[in-house]
Image (cartoon, rainbow, N blue to C red; front, side):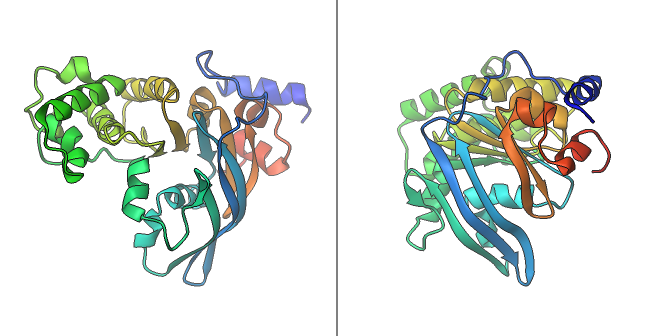
Amino acid sequence: MNKAEQVNVLDELNITKSPRAKKSNEGLGEETISVQSLDLFYDDFHALKNVNMEIPMLQVSAFIGPSGCGKSTFLRCFNRMNDLVEGCRVEGRIILDGEDINSKETDVVALRTRVGMVFQQPNPFPMSIFDNVAYGLRCQGVKDRSILENTVETALRKAALWDEVKDILGRSGTSLSGGQQQRLCIARAIALEPEVILMDEPTSALDPLATSKIEDLVMELKGDFTIIIVTHSMSQAARVSDRTAFFLLGEVIEEGSTDELFHFPKDERTEAYITGKFG
């Protein structure tokens, strides 16, 4: 398949870049999260194999690939959620702000404040909308009501939810619609002012309208946060991300500018996946 044919196929699949998305084919920014020779094992199973990657700060990076390829496992390496999995062993380095987060000296609780996470299924706590957003701050010992109120409003505004809930902050977070619940979870993460927000299939349980709102939100948030998103939707990756990495059987097959990867893949396996020949 020549390059012109690739573009035609991708256009038919609606794999096109949103005009809102920041172009990043001019190269990486000066600040990155550096992944160096990362391997991950579940007992004897080698789940991630020699992953090396530079993830630019204040951009959206997407991980794509078939189920079981290691992309969600890799995502959880950035806040060390894999530490909670029995038999999991990680080798290699992830450098954030000049420090290896895999070091034994790393304060994992502090790391998970700096690296927030939004899961596949919305998971608001069984408490009020206000308390959901304020929860992390209260866990950190913040008691000043004015600080809590200002932070909750700011986080809900950044999550594009304030106008919808400002008059019902005392209502349970679980009473909201699925899309609103997911934005509430994003607000909860934002309230702690993380550097990085991890999103693991954040729209897979949502309808198209709610999905569109989350995608719009991702585009707006990257001005303030580094966002790493796992998605099964190639069209979503193409719409919202600046850079994309394609995973297969625990390996990074190809990564780079989203425009380049989708329209001019260098590896035959990448081309086969994005054109629907397998996956």
